[in-house]
Length: 389
Image 1 (cartoon, helix red, strand yellow):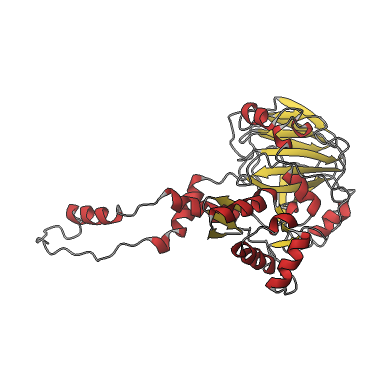
Image 2: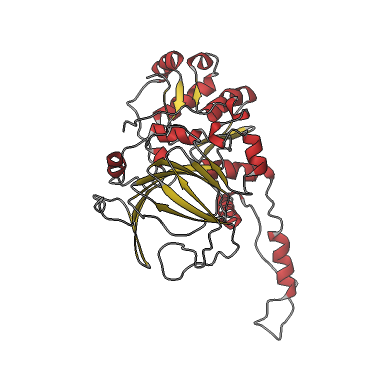
């Protein structure tokens, strides 16, 4: 899909300078003073911003099975929500409806490039770019998010009412998490290019003043319960407790239904031998945080031999496909849910690919055979593409 505007990706040098995107403060100042702490309204964060996808392109996107979308309608106190795909949306003349399109960065290069402007936040936390399209008076009600969010106005105008209230109780019996007792403290109307940052648990309500598109850049904040369950599941095959319970010193019991202290102590002693290291947790995190979402699929390119791949790579360079997620932690590289232990020299060049999402043709000329083998495999899997078209 062709987008109408292609924003430049924020470079790492620029990330240390004052940014219009953040209201002419540095990322360090933003993280110190606002991140997780208080809202920030940024007028003309991206001056003269235009939607990256037209209305028709967005509506075409939600017809696809691999695009996560929801349609929300509101009449009086009645809220309804449907999950996509959608062959058609309600009439544009109908008020009070909102279309939420999740993970647009997975499907459009311009959306991905816009999301990468927020790379002063680590990729382990950066989640996705969602587009909210609404007709006049459309919205999703007063609510709060469990994660940080930047709300960039792309088209039309949206009124935001926000509150630092501690009462986060919800209305019962509705398909959305609507706050029961919303008490707004501040109000803003955002025009295209304006952006509002909100920390987690900050109550807010957005209402479209006219036909409106808002881009939400959201961040991952998995619960410790979720992480703990996933970690233990990932470690099942590594647990090694040899032997079998036995009690050669068993004594007669006059209370046969009771679990004895001896049994409890003996089994506790064996189970407590299970130990996890920081390396175990690093491997889990790398694979878990780089794992593609269930609706993500990669398309393999036409078969290319290693020799021809290398020839082309030395001329053109390679880049990560927008759906690919790559992380690293010495001595491991993680890409799309898989992990590889690499030598320190190889880690250096692969870290460039992870951080910059590309490797130039010049750098590939200095890559080891092992790195070339890995790049060729990832290219064959559809995880990489050519840097120069």
